[in-house]
Image (cartoon, rainbow, N blue to C red; front, side, top):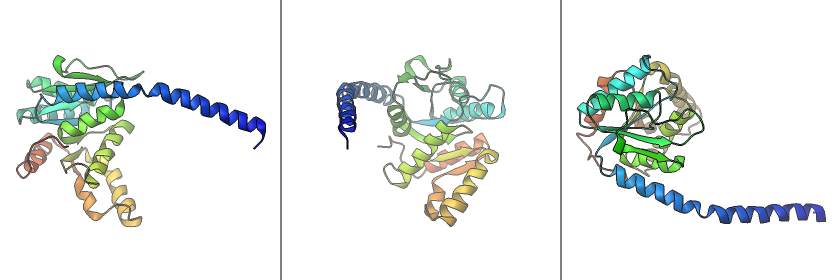
Length: 235
């Protein structure tokens, strides 16, 4: 390595050290978000997390479906947790609000798309700067995941939950995909490629989730699961 290259990499290492030292204070910000989230969420009671696209418009098929699902879940005694934004999240909070059930919004601070919707209970709206802290709240306090059509963020939540259950980091809980037209192709690919062609998952992993099309099927699946399992935080 030439002297010039050595100087270049030495400067980069020094710059890295300075930035790393400054970032140490981030730990306290992360801790503060965990504390606030745990304190508020632990008081709410059993909930179901509803996921889906922030871009879904009111009056469309999946918006109305999410609202109906939330209404029926709150009628069954569950609160509703969403990401707090528009689209499917708004529909979930709106459905909970319709029936007077707990309506929780875990809002993430983003430069676009995300503003807290008006159907979140004022005492149940929590803002997060860190995605990973927010994701812990979704998993720890949810008795099930109801996943409607969405984009990368929705897929992220779906596959993280399946990974945590598959690796026994959390106990199994219902993961329900709503909309066979939307999810069918993905599930076929998981079965045909991940399972049968490549052997990257086990056959029993296909039982970690199910596809339904109606609000009644969602409620039935969750209630059926909890006739055999305790309702409790996941870790």
